[in-house]
Length: 185
Image (tube, rainbow, N blue to C red):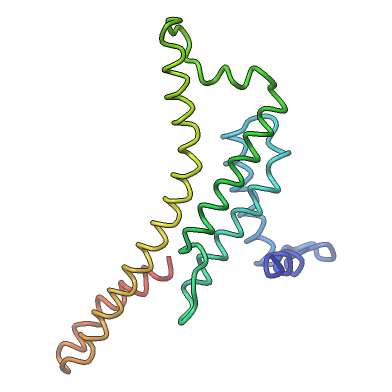
């Protein structure tokens, strides 16, 4: 949190007419997140923008810290990702209930549904709605864990290739360049 706030404060351009590279960088990220929020939420996007912008930087910094040697990416912890997704899910559900009142529960009944099928379909829709919280946490956890495991396997393979012989050492420079490209992306 302090890193992100410090970087935003450092990139502030109040006294300069020409923006710095950091200012352009953070403004482009802000505009990108703003356009995504506008397209998904619509006209009331200003209310949720600080939360989504903060979550974006939290996950970004957490994943980037994991690329530092001998460091641990906290998003490879299932407790953190599931806890974060469940807390956000509960918060947005309570917000939806407070805004839409009883009409919120109408989203669980499909339009044009026969009356005898309503109880069954409400249970199915409720299970589908609640499974989103778990699935988002599991997806973030598994993607980061799989990515880090893949990088560990590739780095171990490249190390063995570099240490095998002189000819293989020079041939290994090509996959090593690709490996560095994967890490930097």
